[in-house]
Length: 165
Image 1: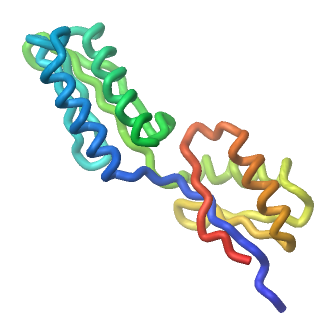
Image 2 (image 1 turned 45 degrees about the vertical axis):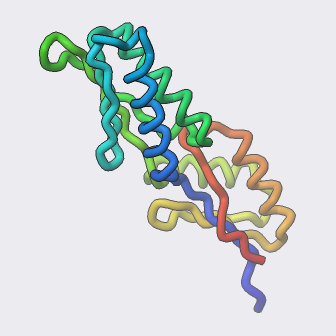
């Protein structure tokens, strides 16, 4: 029996591109006149971005700079999960944004349900660790499924890889 065509649905973030974007944003904060004296900064530690500034208003501007750099480097903003704005030292404010990587159990369930409800007959899927494996008898059915998944917003960036016939 021939193995069925399959592909994997994954959610990954290119951390090198994230680092590049953060470095660019940090340089912009240092040089822009409207950030002078606002103690604005961006730190990347593991999967967490910590954004700081003097006021909530300036903090929103910091977020805007970071998001602009991420988008330019093809990092989906859906990969960011923002925490609450918190008071920090010396009257400043900070906000932590966590980079989401991998597909969690709840998201895997909603992807599986979406495939079951919307994919052509004969397409099946199952969660495997932090990804979803999709298989079908016909390669064309897999391509239809990928197109449908691209159209739907699951709240995280999806990529499709390991396409096997």
